[in-house]
Image (cartoon, rainbow, N blue to C red; front, top):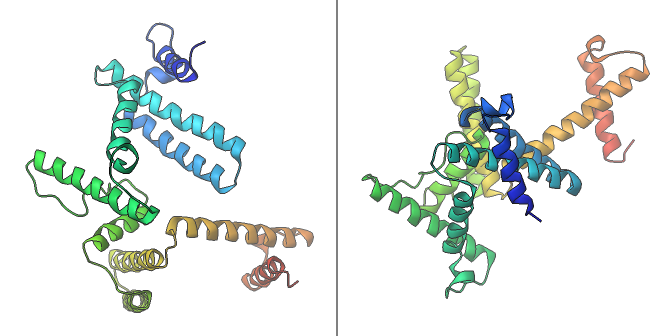
Length: 269
C-alpha cells in the first residue's frame, strides 16, 4: 500500500496535470497560493487555541497540502520537489541539534534555545559572507510577518546584542512618554501620518513590555479579542431580551450591559 504522503503528492500532480487536471489548480502560482497558506497556518493556531485535536488533524493536513502544492509547482519548473524540501529541513534539524545527533551536551531548554539562535546566527553570517555583504543582527526578520510578531522578533534580535531595556518599569516609563507624544500630536491637530507614527511607537513599546513580561503579544491580543467578542455578544443578547438591537441603544446603555457581562464572568452577578 502506498504511503499517504506519496498518495498526496500523486493527487497534487494529477490536479496540476495539463491533460485532465483541475482548471483552478492549473492557473495558480506561488503568489496566488501564498494567502491560502497564511490562512491555513492561522486555522492550525485556532484549532490549538480551542484544544480541538480533531480539527487540528484536519488543519495540519490542509497546511501540509500547501507545502506539497509549492513543491509540485517547483518540480514542474525543474527547481526542486517535495523530497528535496523534506531533505533540506531534515539536514537543518540535524545540524541545529548537535546535542541529539552529535557529541555536544545541552541540559536545559534555555541552553538549547541559546545554542539554536547561535546556529541560526552562524548560518545567517555564512550566507551574508557568501553574498559579499556585512551581516546584521536583524537579518532574516521578514517584512511579511504580522506587525506585532515582527516587532517582537526585531526586539529579541536587538536584545541579544545588548540593545535592550534593563527592566519592565523602564519600559512603562517609555510607554507613558509615547502616550504623551501621541496626545501632543492629537491636540495639535497634526497630519494623519504624524499621528500614525506616534501610535506606531506606542504599539512598539507595548510589544517591548510584553516581551519583558514574557507574554506573547499576539496571543495576549487574541485573548482580548475573544473576551471582547464574548462580552459584546452578551450585550446583544441582553438587548434582544428587550426586543432591541445595539444600533437602537445608547452608549450608556451598552456600557451598563458591558459591566454586567464583566460581573457575570467574574461570578459577581
